[in-house]
Image: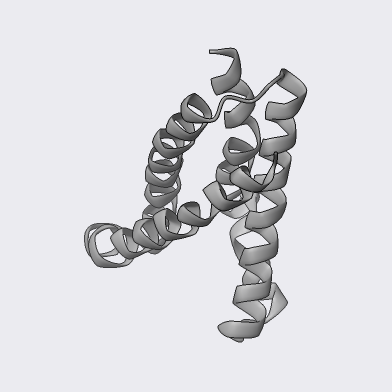
Length: 126
């Protein structure tokens, strides 16, 4: 039953890549790197939200617990992908990968992770 949600997660990678390209091509030309990161976080939340809303409408979870399980699975896949791809493919050091998790420095990437985790449940309730 969860396999379709695993497959539904894959396009989220491409949405995130497109959002990152938007940040690099547009946001960074018009504002600071930090502000571009923050704007990209907001646009990522919006774009992923639209996609997740469609998925939850098309493949409705059977219960609130199921919806929470979907969100936790998407969180796990997202964090695993980010760290495995960043470390093994891009060759980034761990401190570089952890950089966007520093809320005290204005890095708000963690809000995307919170959203990916809670959105299936919130859309299920809605």
